[in-house]
Image 1 (cartoon, rainbow, N blue to C red):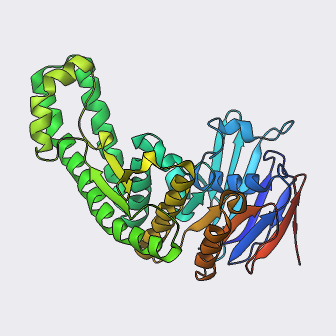
Image 2 (image 1 turned 135 degrees about the vertical axis):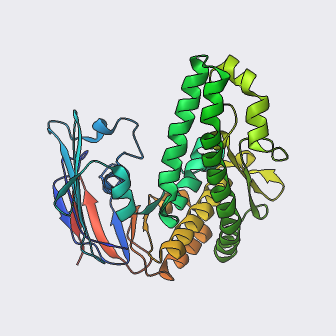
Image 3 (image 1 turned 180 degrees about the horizontal axis):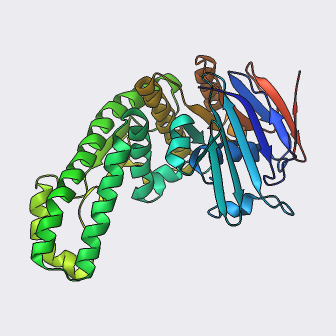
Amino acid sequence: MSLGRLTIRGFRNLEPLELAPGPGVNWLFGPNGAGKTSVLEAIFLLARGRSFRSARTTSVIQRNAQSLTVMAQRADIDHRLGVERDPDGWRGRIDGRDCQRISEFAALLPLVLIEPGSHALLDGGPERRRQFLDWQLFHVEHEYLTGWQRHARLLRQRNAALKAEASNAVLDALEPEYLKSAERINSARASLVEVLAAEVSAVQETLAFRLPGRIGLRYRPGHPADIELADVVREQRGRDRERGFSRHGPHRAELVLSCGEQPAAELSRGQQKLVAIVLLLSQFQRVERGQELAPLLLIDDPVSELDGPHLDALMAWLVERPVQSWITATRGSPIPAQMFHVEQGAVTPMV
């Protein structure tokens, strides 16, 4: 997948811009603070409805601007997408029709982001790793989002019943569907981890990063693995009543990551960044195989984050793949690329 045109207005320090990116590597270079990462952030916001740099999406609206606008046209198929954001909310359009569902934008603009904070996939909370799995399933199993949303609704209903001290009869009526949806989520995630482990092994071998061992992945389903979830939920209902929420299920699941004999969270920060790159490129390849369509790849400042051999390995991986990527750096590209110079918010194509 690739973008044929990108338009950004009212976004951070960027001047209004309209870019015609190339189908391969698009390399944005310039001094720190020039606005390079803001271009990646705008693409991410269009696809995911939020910023990867700020929890407050309104903070990306340019000072003295009423709103921001990001629009893109896909080059491979004729889809036009656009979002406008102001302090009161956001409005989206896809192919000329109003659209308020972020999931539709995400389906049309799958992307993988590698940025300096990606190590949080290893040392952050388990929710981030669950999202890592769920994002892939959303893109390769078309019914997964519907099932995930159904389970989230049933979980909210059970939690509300527990908090309201509802009768056992009410919980007896709620729990069969809750358990059925939970098992589907756990089964899909566990199957993905098996497939993804092989992908991770292949990417790690290709990149040959200096790491203390093989990267390991194991799915823990949010309840003791040797006991059926239905039995756990039934036996622990009293404790759940005391706490006022459901303590077992896929919402408490964990993707356990390791490298050699070490838990991934105990690696050095530099090693964590390398493992995160392997995991995210494996995610990229898994979605590419599942969709037969490569996502966009956004990489923020790899030149500063990686030393020479590791940067060379990442660049070699990119050269071998005819996918559209957007990369930021303070200097020009070491590989063939469409280059854009960024200076004080102005983005200029280099001919």
